[in-house]
Image 1 (cartoon, rainbow, N blue to C red):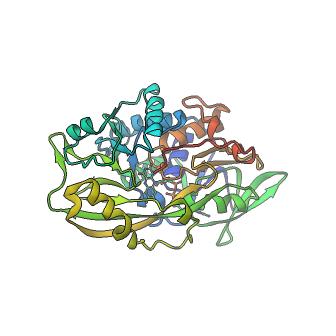
Image 2 (cartoon, helix red, strand yellow):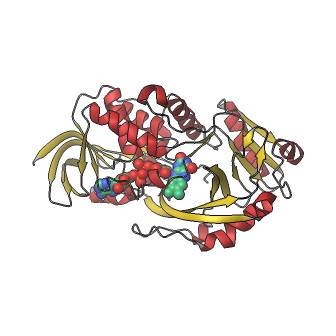
Image 3 (cartoon, rainbow, N blue to C red):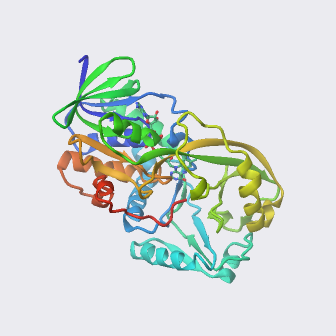
Length: 392
Ligand SMILES: Cc1cc2nc3c(=O)[nH]c(=O)nc-3n(C[C@H](O)[C@H](O)[C@H](O)COP(=O)(O)OP(=O)(O)OC[C@H]3O[C@@H](n4cnc5c(N)ncnc54)[C@H](O)[C@@H]3O)c2cc1C
C-alpha cells in the first residue's frame, strides 16, 4: 500500500471536515486522511443546503445536538477568523387542528431542554407576525432566540483551512472498495487503483453513505433523496418592525425563509411519492413550485401572491429511511468502521456537535459532551427506531 493513515474519513464536506477537526481537537495523535471525490463540493448536500438551524425537534437528543452546534457557530468567528453567517431570525412552525397535539407535545420537550420557543394561538400569532394569514391555523411555535440559518460554505472552507494547518491530509479520489481482514477494514481502495492502509474509517459520505457502507459489507439505510429549493423575489416583502420573517413552515409542509434580496422555499414530497434518487440526478423539480409551493405560500402570506421565481437548485438529503435520524457511532458488524451520517435534512446544523461526540467516542472511548448512544447505528438491526416527528 502506498500510503497509510490511522483514520481515513470518507467524504470531506461538513461532516468529514468537522470529524477531522474534532479528532485533532480531542488529542487524536495519529495521522488523519480525508478522501473526497468532488473537491469543489458542487454536489455535496452541504453546499446545496438551506442551512436552517432550529431547536424545534421532538427528540431531546436532536435539540441537544442543535443547541451545542449553535454555540459553536456563534463563536465561529473568534475561532476561525471568519463568521459563520449566522442569522438568528427564528423558525415559525405552524399547526392545524390536526397537528396541534404534536406541536404542543414537541413544545413541552423543547422547553424542558431550555429552548426559547413561544407557542401561541392564532390571535397572538397574528399580532407577532402581521404578514401571516392565520386561516386554518390552530397554533404556531416561534423560536424567540437560538434559531435561524447560516452559511455552511464559509464554515466548510474555514474548517478545512484550519485542518490543513493542523496536518490533516486531504486526498482527492473516490473510495471504491475496502480491504477487509477479520471483520475489520485494513485498507481503502480508490477508484484510480490507489491503495491506502488504515487503522479505522469514518463514513461521512452524506447521501452516498449507504453505498460506502455496502463496500465494507455493512448495511446502512442511508440513501439520497432529492429536494428542490426555489429562489423567488417579492415586490412587497413581508416585514415586521423586528426585521425579516423567520423560517416559516406551513401546515402544508412548505417552508420559506429570506435569502439575500429575496426568499428561498421548498417542500418534501409526500411519503407515497418519495423514494431514493438517482445519485446523478440534480435536476430541479420545477413543477413543484406551481403545483405545491407557490399556492401554499400565496395562501399563507398574502404578500407572496405576486412573486417572481428567480431560479432553483436540487440537492440530496442523506436520508435515513429507517427513522430519519442521524447514525452516529461504531458499525455493529465492522469493528473499526464508524458512521456520521443519515441526518435526513438536519445535518449542517448538527455537524459540529455530532462530529465532536464521535471524536470523543473514538479518542476517549466514551461520549463526554453529548451522549449520542441513542444515535448508535446498531438500533437499525435491533429494530429500535429513534423517531423524530419534526422532519422538514
Ligand atoms: C436541499 C437541501 C436542504 C437542506 N436543508 C437543511 C437545513 O435547513 N438544515 C440542516 O441542518 N440541514 C439541511 N440539509 C441537510 C444537510 O445539508 C446535510 O445533512 C449535510 O450537509 C450532510 O453533510 P455531509 O458532509 O454528511 O454530506 P455531503 O455534504 O453530501 O458530503 C458528503 C461528501 O462525501 C463525498 N463522497 C461520497 N461518496 C464518496 C466516495 N465513495 N469517495 C469519496 N468521497 C465520497 C461526496 O462527494 C460529498 O462531498 C439540507 C440538504 C439539502 C439537500
